[in-house]
Amino acid sequence: MTPEQQFQVLSGGTEEILPEGELLERLRQSARERRPLRVKQGFDPTAPDIHLGHTVGLRKLRAFQDLGHQVVLIVGDYTGMVGDPSGLSRTRPQLTRAEVERNATTYLEQFFRVLDREPAAPRLPVEVHRNGEWFARMAFADVIRLASQYTVSQLLERDDFSKRYQAEQPIGVHELLYPLMQGRDSVEIRADVELGATEQKFNLLVGRELQRLDGQRPQIVMTLPVLPGLDGVQRMSKSLGNYVGVTDPPAEMFGKIMSIPDQAMALYWRLVADATPEEIARLERELRDGVNPMTIKKRLAERLVGMYHGAVAATRAREDFEAQFSRREIPKDLAEFGRRELRSRGGAKDDATILHFVVASGAAGSRTAARRLVEQGAVDLDGERVSAWEDAVDPDREHVLRVGRRMLRYVPGAES
Image (tube, rainbow, N blue to C red; front, side):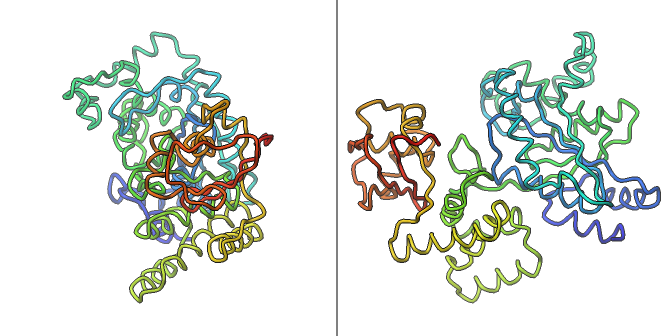
């Protein structure tokens, strides 16, 4: 592709590209010099699995990779121990080094469900770094030098820090270091472009400033939209329980996608389903013409399951879903949970209630959320609508639990 054609592909679906106009200039220079751009994104392994929200950036990175540019993934083993304060009203709980390392192992495997691990030319293999490679060797004098490159007043210009300061909410000194650490990553790998969600804009701009102070050409900042979770309102998050994991079983992934609000469909098509402009135009035309949103949503769910599990699994997931909700049959390949999840997540040992089961299934992140689902009439047990959240459930026999459009099987001895 020409630099102009590359720009059309890469700029699609972005919120901002800063400085304006510089990406096209850098792509032209890349073509003249036959030097691929170094395109960076960092991920802090704060949980064991990635979800569709993470793939918004990964799919954009894949577009750069397909065009022959060098993708650089930063696994934030050190920033992960600090915790990104972006968009938060309070300090994140700190993870131990062991927790971060366990999570990083699964992150790396899952990244390559989107990126190409062993691409053919002209695509380049992904370059992967842990930021501990440079932070672990820093002496305390180096930390002081890094901290001296920004002032407290500059850091307090950040919206979330400013709000917490005005509300007299505590801000840890380690949190103030986070943007500097992320910026230092850009210096270390000499990034030409850095991607991040809209809430990351401050951190990305810090990277530009630290590169300038280091004598490097400042990176281009590309911000991407935030994918809403299954509630269609809050950002997708494992802690909120509104996520679709890239390793979710096909039937579970299909069911979760079918539960998203109709108004969120277009965003999912654009951000995580690799929809072409023609497909987006078709979607808008169908919605305008009154096509049943469920029909469009099934197409979306089948597309996403196929992307992560293959076409055969996607077809089977659709057939099972239609059997379950059109003919009220129970699919054969339901995701399972067992006594181990009931005791670790649900917190029940003997006197299990429906709340324990809903939390243990992973369909709700807390008993409060589970109670709300029951009160909304969104929970069935063994084909019967649950009306009382304190109803006891026998943990010694199998059950089929439905939460919204998700259906799961409880098997007492399951080791899932």
